[in-house]
Length: 61
Image 1: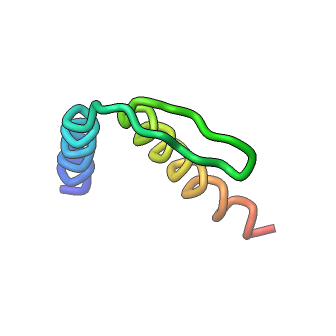
Image 2: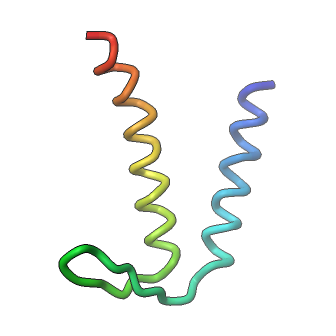
């Protein structure tokens, strides 16, 4: 059941990313960059996964 929920979440994430293909401007403190919204979503998902993996690992020490 958990695997089914994860599969549905992954399918939803891919559909959401593919439906948002326009270019957006991302502002930082010292500049900006124009990226496709797909890349912004992928980067945010990867950073979220990295934090979800890393925070519990380093908080146990």
